Image (cartoon, rainbow, N blue to C red):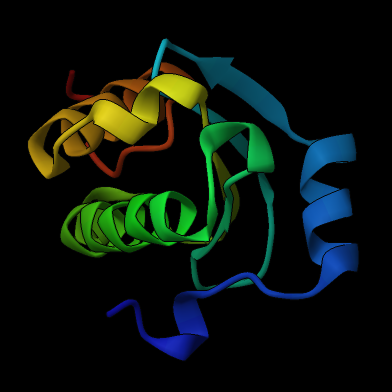
Length: 116
């Protein structure tokens, strides 16, 4: 589970990321990033187009685990919002982790992005 200090929960925080942040997307995910506090915080958005509550909660669990595994590689001081697309319903944890890694790298939000 993603520790509470790394979670983005307030609606105003989500709106700030959407309005001030940059975004990149692929067929599984869209990732929005904006400068935030000293610790990286991550929020998740899984809409009803994806399916019923069972499918949405499964995708959220997978996304939280993918973000938890990838958190040490994300540069500190960013607020991220990860939005699941409809195709994320069929994706595995490995697919979602790979997609997240690729999108965070495109944003230049990896700790070692200057070395890549």
